[in-house]
Image (cartoon, rainbow, N blue to C red; front, top):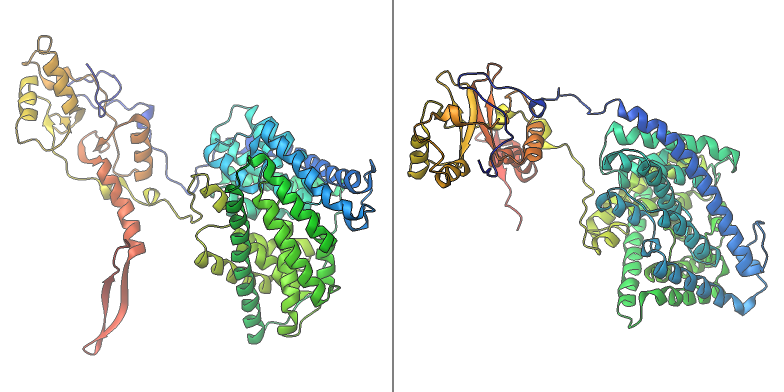
Length: 620
């Protein structure tokens, strides 16, 4: 018998017998989480991922140092030498141009995915690439980033190492029989481990994974990320300095003026975040209009970087020394302003040109410099305090990750006393950018590639409703009907639905009959006996729902089997209801109503308080 979109897998059904329950009828036991023992396997693999990410991060830092020494000093050495001390003079202008030419060639003939910040590319791999990153990207991304930063690019190493660490996690996951979601957990675990290896901030790395990369909150993904980050935090002490990267111990006594000042800093950084985002994508739009291949765009960006380096050499490279000077209060107003303006311009142009580099370290410098400029206008505090708040708030607002930015600043400096001011400033910066900009600096790049993502997460309404809450009272057909009676009924004006449950006299469901079945019988009129009982003809096993089943579980089974209408039966197999696709929307409609419908709970009317509903107008 030809099947329709609402028929089912073959399984003999005898008239009057109770339905047989196969594996597709199994109803999971409701619980807080869906994790099973496979999470232990993922946690074990995350140990390997964390270790590999630490080695990759160490290698990337050494490559950056090596490229810097070769480009600006002509030395094949791993000694940390400042770009500003280069003997090249005016020849320094050509260094970023040559470096960007190399990156353009690597992107053109290697992989275009090495272009950009690093984090958007990781998000894209998670959302549309089934968490698969190629070995080519895993190799070329750190190489291109080392060339970019080593030749003066005003970027940080964190974006590339997040992408590279994610690639390491993805490659390890691809060697094992895993689902796409499990690969995602290991990809993000590698990214968090890479960030931890660079900055020594495991808590912030885990929060970054939650706020930016995972797109879910499940033990299956959270626990491997924690394992990889903590392993990286422990093992980085063997290769790098275990002390906080930017040790600082400033604080400010909480008071009403202090709270208002923290909010002012957050507002200023939020506005600055919007300006920086507009600069990057405005520059990218200008490059899009150039009549030359995108391979040559980084060279133009490199020229701007080189010229900016002549004006302010401190604006080149990662610039960790600048963060130290800002926190220590060593930069006067004019020096902080020059650093902010020059680095912001060359950073926006270089990033808009499509070269390879991260945004996190530059954001810290921008926020710190702006905080230094605001310091004379703000209440008295410990030296560098407003710089610290500016650094964190700029990061939290621009990346839309306020919790990550707060903990990142604490772990980066070791200053736990600044936790409350940091949280206030980051939250205000976050609120400012959320209200002003539809997209962040990370998601705008993804949106321009045609992929929409949402950064608001909430409980699935399907997982908060029972089938008994959405099922409807069904019409049914008696199993004692003949095939001819059934055909006549479907051909009449009396029938209202595409399919019906078929039940015995005691309401036991023995199958489903659909319009497609009737059309098949009509096309086989010479083979089908119109006098046969309907219960004897059905050979399709229906999919059953249970009233005490979660709507989400039933919806998953309906989608997996391609079924649009499901009879709901009790423990005895008797029909108690029916769920169609449209009934599933009931649970969703409740969530929409919770968001849209407004009510004033306490309203004084004629001397007494009553509840007064107030339905908001639907959005256009």
